[in-house]
Length: 157
Image (cartoon, rainbow, N blue to C red):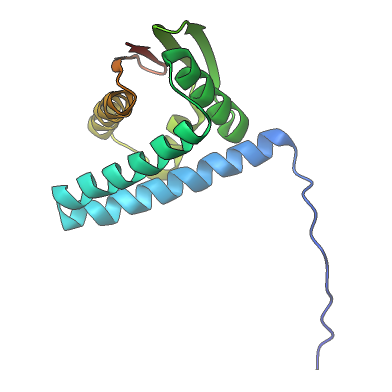
């Protein structure tokens, strides 16, 4: 008979490791979900995206987000704190921009999925649609400019 030991595990990871693990976990869940849903058809993927967007919008509205500047601030703070992305924001009540210097989720998705260039392009198009749909929920428009390793998203009234 073995003797079991009981240990209370405490949070000891440095912030950078916590963020990298959070990005990896989120990217893995996203890749798994889309992998399964794509086999079920385009409607299943669309339904999933709509359900996820509904929850995200509700959370942002609970935080009091109404203007383009409030939106980019909330998005950048979340991604920087949770995933470790490096994002600059600029704007006002009518127009605001997220300028991704590094996107931890993009980097994690590339590691988790080993995407081909065509799949990366498809994911970029998905990002554009996602941001445009999110903007619409706030009565805004989104302009997404993709570069090889960076992305800029501008929300306007």
